[in-house]
Structure formats: C-alpha cells, structure tokens
Image 1: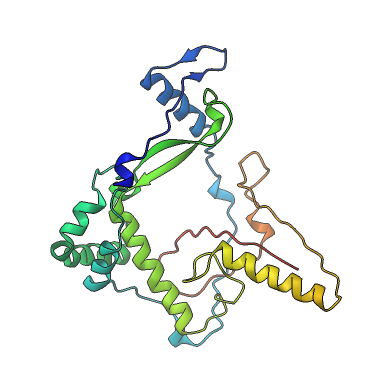
Image 2: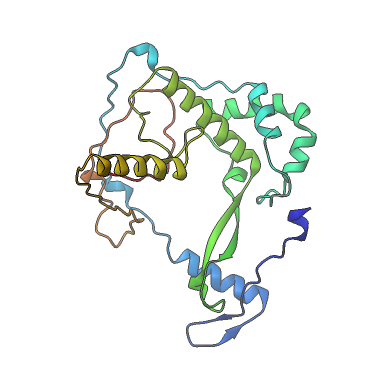
Amino acid sequence: MRSRTKSKDKVGPLNDSVGNVIDDDKGMCDMLNEFFGSFFTTENIAGMPEVNMLFNADGSQKLNVINIEPGDMYDKIMSLKDGKAPGDDGIIPEFLIRVACEISNPLAILYNKSVMEVMVPLEWKRANITPLFKRGSRSEPGNYRPVSLTSYLGKISEAVIKDDILHHLTVHSLPVINDSLHGFLAKRSCLTNLLEFLEHVTKAVDHGKPVDVIYLRFKTRSSADADNGLDAFSSQSRSTNMVPFSVHCDFSLSM
C-alpha cells in the first residue's frame, strides 16, 4: 500500500544551455539522456596491462565451476520485494513470485548454460534509466542522477553467483575475506564499519594513545585523466577456469 500511495518526484521543467525552458516529456528526456551520456567514455583496451595469474593456495580450493540449483533460484525469487519497478523487459517481482515453482528449474538450466558458455543475454543488460532528483534547482539537469532499472532475471543470476563465490571464499578461509570487509558480507554494512571504527578510536583514547585518521575518497576516472592507470596497481588473480566478473566495492580505511 505504501508503494501505491507514495508520491513521485516530478522532473523539470529543465533549462538548456542557452536558457530555453524545456517542459515537454521528449525534450526533457533527450536533454537528460545527453547529459548522462556525456559522462561515459570509451576506454582504450589496446594498452591494457597483462595480468599474471597467481594462485598460492591448495588446488582443491579453486572455484572452477558454479552450479546453480533450482532450489537456489526458488529462494532468490521468493526473497524479491513487491512493488518494485521492472526493468526493460517489463517483468515485475509479483509475477516471478507467483510462478516461482514453475520457473525455478528452467531458470537454473538457463543460468548454468549462461555461466558455462560465458554469455549473458542482451535482455539482461538492457536497462531503463530514470532520473532521481538530488538537490538544488529542478531545472538543472546536473541536479539529477541516473538510476538503472535492469531485468530481475539478471539480478537473480548475479545474486546466486555472488552467494556461491562468497560461500566458497568463506568455507576455504581464503585471504580475500578478512575482518576489515563490511561491504557485501552478511550482517555487515556501513553502520558496522563505523561502529568498529568508533570502538577502535575510543579504545585508543581511553588508553591515552594518539589517533590519526586518513580520509580517502575514490572517484571514477575518465579517459581525460591520462591513461587507465591500471599499471599503478599490482594485479593478482586466482587461477580459475571461470569467466572474470567486474566487482564494485565501497570501503573505508582507518589507521
């Protein structure tokens, strides 16, 4: 009921670069699309550094295959929340929940085939981009940020694969998982990170020790910021037959 009654923020009218007021839906959509698209860059992958494949653990700890079971699919589908906006395919969570028993096995077959063939259906990559108002004047395109609404079928596959990888790392106690991680572990969040940091600082102060704090902020690099800069980092990767997935992590550092 809350999702049905909640009022949505109105977009615009918008002002273009010469001060003209744009108030029709298509005009505002085109303007926001042009503004959001201006931040995308085409990376030069020809100069990408070679990555040395390293794996220092026992061979039995390699994650060579991810096997998705129908039960995993059913649990993920039933955990979806009602009232959420669909992606480009128009499939809403309510529909998936109602047919969870019937589609769990076909989806498991489809996802396993996707992993084995290292291929993601194009429909799972498409997204509806909706502008979300941040602050300031509603007439400025820069005061909106884009939110991608992707297919729930793609989201379910990502969640199942993530759980499988995380379970493997946790069971084998690989050094990738340690106590300083709070971003994607169960029962951990930004709040637990801040509480742990506060405990560390107050304990040091109670013992009369000085505390130095370094604040780091990581920003997305554009192609104009020199080269891709990957050679500035030491790249290590596990030896595996799996396709590499791109992972985004938010973290903080205290000293």
